Amino acid sequence: MPYDTLAIEDHGPVRRILLARPEQRNAQSQQMLDELMAALDDAQRDDAVRVVVLGGRGAHFSAGHDLKQAQAERANFTVEERWAYEELRYFDYSLRIWDFPKPTIAQVQGACVAGGFMIANMCDLVVAGESAFFSDPVGHTLGAAATEVLIHPWVMGARKAKEMLFTGGKIDAREAQAIGMVNRVVADEELPDAALAMAQQIAKAPPFGLRLIKRSINRSLDAQGLRTALQAHFDTHQLSHLSEGFLTARDRGLASAIQKNTNVKTEKAA
Ligand code: ZN
Image (tube, rainbow, N blue to C red):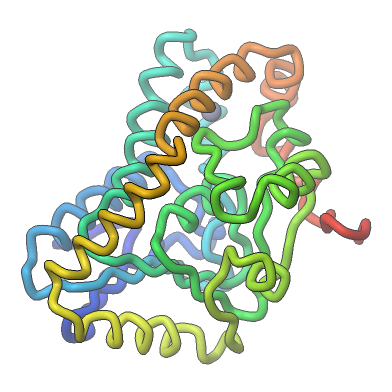
């Protein structure tokens, strides 16, 4: 199936889905997100596909949601319109990745920011290139209560999540590995092969067993309240879209707001 914003590769039992708007740092347009869901449906239906790798073409995994499109098409959404839009395309789509019945690996290089951070962390495993960095600066840049899905404390611990979100800073691949958010860090040139090798190893196991392992681990997180906490945060996030901080950023232009904050690190100002 041809996509405008994705590139699809098959490597035996592994399907690699690449975000493919490299000129826009793989900013997630509505079309890209819709195509990603169609590509996942296709990968789920195809019994030959046992593991999915999600990556990005070019120097960056993804800089986040396409804020130029957001400004042009959604800046004046009503509460009801924004809620419906973000519930489907950001919340439900993200949870679709989380609940995908086959193992998933995020293959991350360069920027993995805001909406990009959100979907990378919906994958079961993360393999990063040395250039990868992770951040969610929207509290600083847009006055928003983090991204729509607050996966942060679940993948990095509450203390680090607070530091990242309070400072608007970023963490590099090595630190992300040290705190357990990233499984493996490799040189950028080795990243596609390293992610593929991990996926091939996983694909050797019988698929139904893998499916049950994923189900049980995700259920153990649900038993700790993951899904309820994410749903509650989605509501809180919607409140932040009505705040003075957000409306001021919107009136200045969403896309320009995000540019200011790209060089901050969590530990030391760059
Ligand atoms: Zn939002």
